[in-house]
Image (cartoon, rainbow, N blue to C red; front, side, top):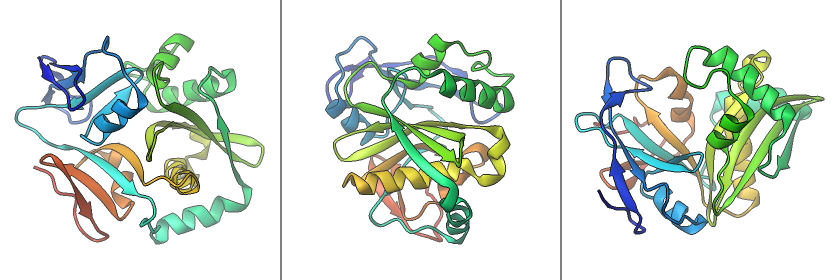
Length: 246
């Protein structure tokens, strides 16, 4: 046990199967789940490469692997690439964004179930209940979680679970209707979060972890410029440069 940047106790898990890279073992550093938490402390932990799942705040701490790289986008400096512009222009006329408070919504939950059945049917997230869904996505402590709905005309395409903090948004999790996969809903969700952060006058959008060779996370590498948390500090990564990792 040790202490986090803001004071709460930190615990290191034993080795467990890596969720992202086959054949790897992982370890996780996590904040004492009983420690008092606030939006300000949560932001400070984000600034040190941590992430949340429900009320649990964690960071990978594998002894022989450092493939998980925290990323954030400086929203004022961001410029979409050609593919992102095409994605936006293709849907802009029919796309609307609706912001909801963090409470259970059966329509959103039904969308989540369809997404999990299509993408993670053989994993631990399968057969989600309303309780497990809320435990995974919503936070019971400080900060404001917004449920950003992306509607394409009269159909709910995606929900981006987003934490709203003092100077940043944090992209917690996005799920979408598999029928809209061709419209790149994940990319659209990030573009909408960047737009929302700019509208609110915030500095950053935290994207969570990127892993070299993990197909599900490859889209994060296309948002430039971005910053990567490497060796205890944030490094700028411009367009055309590779994300550093070791």
